[in-house]
Length: 266
Image (cartoon, rainbow, N blue to C red):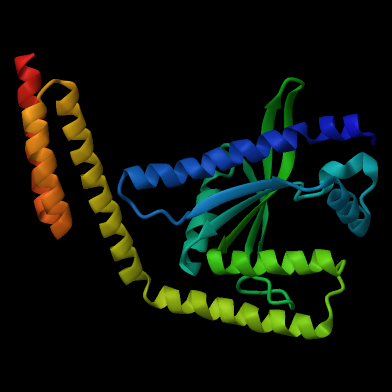
């Protein structure tokens, strides 16, 4: 294939990456807006490099006219805070199967880690892409892992690239040791995840209240109620220094009531 042929071949895969990122980021955003815990921390995506596609095809014995059989040309990575979140995200993917994507199979490298120490949960899906040439169904790989697993996998990938897949045994052994250390970190974090989640939710809740207060004060300024807005702003500064959530919540309600009063006058 020449450059132009490759460019045309990769169009649906590039489109799939963007669409899938939007879908999974949308799930996270929706849960956050509903003040619910999101098992998705963040989402990334990539298209496999042409050299890597050819290398993978050669390894699997896939001829050039059947490159669409390479399962991970489109790759989506979903990062989670805790190991338990991985199962929740995998279930979200399963629930979508038959709707906007089709689950082909799963590979659990967390319960059955690779000899190198690699851990991740992989899901292969079929995803329909609507292009200018019509609908095309492609294969895509969704990798679900914790932040610690992702850090380790990124380092391993870099070393594999440097040594062209032949990492020296002493470095391999150290990688296996660090893989266990990363998994131990995940295990320890899972033990205190309720405390971590409570702290994060409290921070999120307080941030939302502060945002509503600032929006309300700005609203009053824009409507010309400068004296009232200034008084609320000074009161907010004092409360924020104390950090009392109940006080901030009451101030937010007071400002909202004032805005409603202003609206009835207009």
